[in-house]
Image (cartoon, rainbow, N blue to C red; front, top):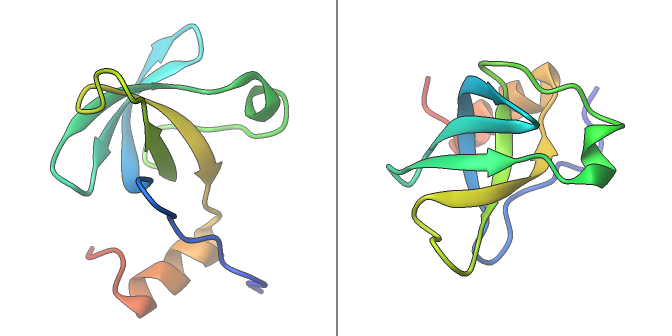
Length: 91
């Protein structure tokens, strides 16, 4: 059951986690065609378990916006199915 679905805002972008790099960092292939090394901020680190293949919302940094960013949100399996239905993700 999906309640209110969180969608990317302003300069946020969807992405798929490709590889875990250690020290709360990971490589994410964003749906805007760029690969970014992103970090998990402290408030998410203790609440959410992120693994390879997960769909996440990435907020690019102001500096090095094409290469770096922060994870803002991780989608559950039901939410990913809803995003596919809505056309945000093509599988």
